[in-house]
Amino acid sequence: MRPADAWIDPSQPKARAWVTHGHGDHARSGHGAVLATPETLAIMEVRYGPQRGQPIAYDETIRVGDVEVRFVPAGHVLGSAQIVMEYKGERIVVSGDYKRRPDPTCACFVPVPCDVFVTEATFGLPVFRHPETGSEIDRLLHRLHADPSRCVLVGAYALGKAQRIITELRARGHSEPIYFHGAIERLNQLYESFGVELGELRHTGGATKQEMAGRVVIAPPGALNDRWSRRLPDPVTAMASGWMRIRQRARQRNVELPLVISDHADWDELTMTIRELEPTEVWITHGREEALKHWCMTHQIKACELNLVGYEDEDD
Ligand SMILES: [Zn+2]
Ligand SMILES: [Zn+2]
Picture 1 (spheres, rainbow, N blue to C red):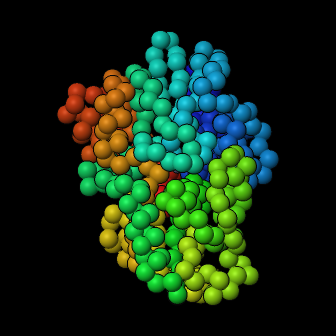
Picture 2 (cartoon, helix red, strand yellow; picture 1 turned 45 degrees about the vertical axis):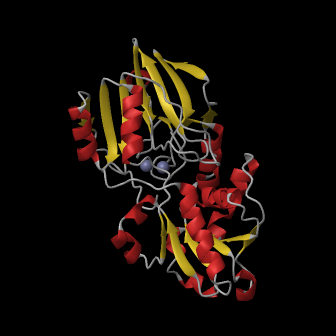
């Protein structure tokens, strides 16, 4: 953002960075000053240690140079924000990563009509249509109850997805203890400190196979086929990701129970959002840019690909 001398989600250390959310590909370490929501700053501190951060609450407006800046909810993970900038009568919205469906762990996406909308396109192909989250959670519970001697091991991205799966399970009436891999412990605690209720959680370390039989176990995707999983009672391997729509991806990870649950907008959410915001221009940052660009053009909206490197949403 040149007139404000600031970078949004820079992949290299910068003197002044505005950060949309805490995922590692957007929030890097080593910046001078970081402007972000209090939740995102707290996530960065858990991951990288103390930050020279300036917290900005949702809907608070600040002025940087000639630019007015506001952060509004993006519905992606706890603290995730779209950055709304007004400069010389023009409004630009940088959405970072976002989704439109409800998520009990974070504030809902707020649509802000704008002149330029900068969007991701992780699932920017018409084949990507995520099913209802509740029906995916019901499939998980059905499988869990089908064989009480086994556990269901769910691979879920440590920031956001793991806590969302837990709260969605609670919302479907699952009140039993949920076991977790040590790698998500601090983020669970952080979510709870911001008021997200996760219910009774137990560390897998020290638990016996017998105790974990008939339970849900949540772990980062990298742990699914790891030695670590041998301590579990004959796990049914599940994975919660928008990529589970693609059978080959599920097979690559030996996933028996693919759950199509994503923190990114699917094709319908992307196109619905652009329709709703009515921008004159759309800039597409990362993902499957071509199809979305084509869709914009057929709807008389100017579109371009920014071809940004360094954003990876492979597990999301
Ligand atoms: Zn993200
Ligand atoms: Zn991303």
